Image (cartoon, rainbow, N blue to C red):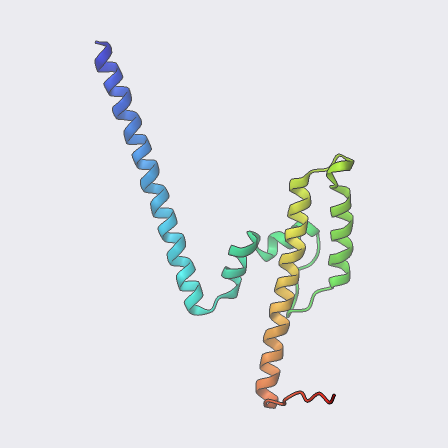
Length: 138
C-alpha cells in the first residue's frame, strides 16, 4: 500500500515539473522570437526595454515626471527628482538599495529615450539638408 502512494506522489510530481518546464520553454521561445522580430524591424523601444528592464511609462511613474513629448524632456526636472529620490533611498540612511537602483534605472531609461529621439531627429535633419562634413582646422 505504501509503495502505491509513493509511486502516485512521484508520478504526480514529475507531471507537474514536466509541465512547468514545457511552459517555461514556450515562454522563452516566444520571447526570443519577439526579440528577433523587433531587431529585424528596427524597433528600438523593444531593444531598450530589454536592456534596462523598464518601459518609458514605468520610468516616468517612478520619477513622477511627464513622458518626453516629441523627444523633448525637461532633463533638469528629471535630474532634480532623481537626486531627491536617490538620496532619500540611501541605504546608510535607512533607505532601500532596491528602490535606489530602480530610481537610477528610471533616470537612465528617460535619458536613453531622449538621446535616441535626438539622434533620430539629427539624422533626419541631415538627410533633409544633405551631408555637410565638419572641417576642423588645426
